[in-house]
Length: 263
Image (cartoon, rainbow, N blue to C red; front, side):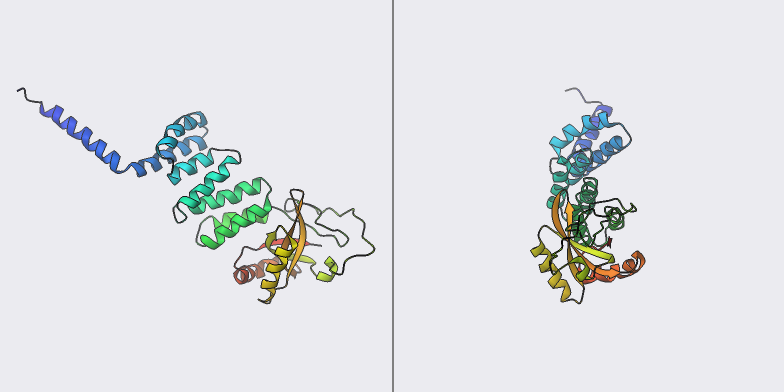
C-alpha cells in the first residue's frame, strides 16, 4: 500500500480544519461578509454589493447583520419592514437600536413626522444609552416648525426649521368655539410631547399629563393632508427657555420632547 506523502496529509488536515472552523463560526462569517458588502455599497461599488448580497441573503435569511445590510441597500419603503424585522428578531441585539434610528431617519425623509416621533419614542424608551439618541433628536429638531394662527382651524403647514412662518389666509369665523387657541394660552414656544390621530386620544393623554402638573394642550396639525393632534406643553417665551425645560418635561412624561413655535 503506497504511503501518502507527509505534505499531502498536512494539506488534507489543514483543509479539514478550515472547513470545521468555518462551520462552527458561520454566524460570525455571515456578519463579517455583511459588513464587507455594506462597505462596498457605501464606497460606491453598488454593483458588486448587489451581486454579493443575493447568495448571502439565501444563506443567512434571519441574521440581523445581513438584514441590516439589505435594508441599507434598499432605497424605497421596503426597507422599513426589514428594520422592523431586526428589532423583532433580536430586540436586545447589537443592531436593534441602529434599526430603530434608521426608521426615524427614513420617516424624517418621508416627512412623516408622526411615525418619526413614534420611533424616536421607542429609541428613547427602549435604548436610553444608545449612541443614536443624540443624532435622532437632532434630526427631529429640524423636521418641522409649525405655526398656529388665532383665526385658523388648523396648522398652516409643515416648514423646515428656520423658515419664515407663513401667515394664514383663512378668515376668522365670527362664531368661534369656546376652546380657541387664544383661550388655550399657548403662544410663543412649546414642547411637543406627542402626536395623535384623534382629538379624543390627545385629550386622554393631556389629562394624564395634567395630573402630573404639566400644562398640556392638544392642538391640530396637518400631516400629509390629514388632521392630527399635537400635544404640547408650555408656553415658553423663547426656545432657550423651552430647551431648559425639555429634560424635566421629557422625564415627567417619559417621552421625547421637541421645541415648536406656536403663534
